[in-house]
Amino acid sequence: MMISLSLKHESVTHTRRELKLIDDAEITQIAQEFLHVDDEEYLDSIPILEADGSDKAQQHSVFHIDPYGSAAEQFRLMQRRLSNLRPAGGSVLLTSPGIGDGKTTNANNLAWALAEAGHSTLLLELDFRRPGLHRYIPEIPPHDLNDVLLGEISCASAVRRLHELPLFYLGVDKPAPRPIRLLRSKKLTELIRWANQTFSWVIIDGPPVLAVSDVEEILPRVDLALMVVRERGTPRAMLERAAERLGERLNFVIYNDALLSDSYGQK
Image (cartoon, rainbow, N blue to C red; front, side):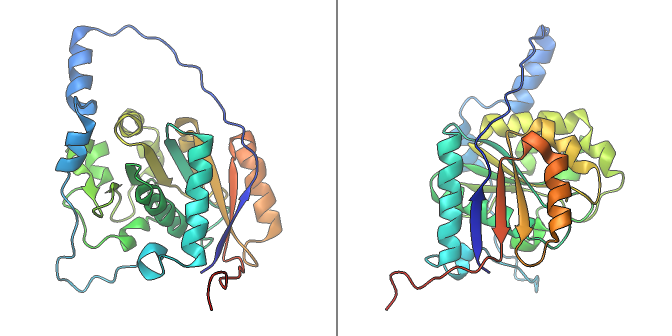
């Protein structure tokens, strides 16, 4: 798998913040569930996921397979451009025109690149219809995003660590019923707000643009949007329709499966 990055533009859409007066009870509730006095202490306390000895077939990032290869270097370039664009970090949605373009693979590898650079990074699954990030984790966590959105557990308790690097995960194990209802829920808005306050970067594996309307529910809640297309695989008409639908919210286009030379520095 070879990957190249194409920078579309560097405009960032700024949202207007609205001020709202809240009472003491609401402040206490928000503080208990979403804020941490010491985020670093919280991050260090998150349990790490390790293989449980089962026969679960796990896929691996390019940083496992070939950490010094050209694909890994492309993701390092990608994280550098994102960090230059938003030095303070932010939330990033990865989507694609349709299925099979490689958005989940790119989301996983981009999160690894950011964590490798020292940024605390949460890998968040928001593709409720065809979740795929669970293929990249060594075991299924005791709780998933559905449990959080249903109010059965706090987001802080559901997150798991994937590596000694500051890389964290909150995902979906299987397709969820009524995904639009989950995407429109107040709980999801609160979760993304909490994640932005707790982690430097939130990398979101979202649904495809054209297949369903789910992406339009997510876009207002993120800082940047990246679209993954497969070279020689994504029809041009689909790419154009997807770019038109995303409009000015589209910040980067990632060309997946691009042919790159990996001979530099090799004898």
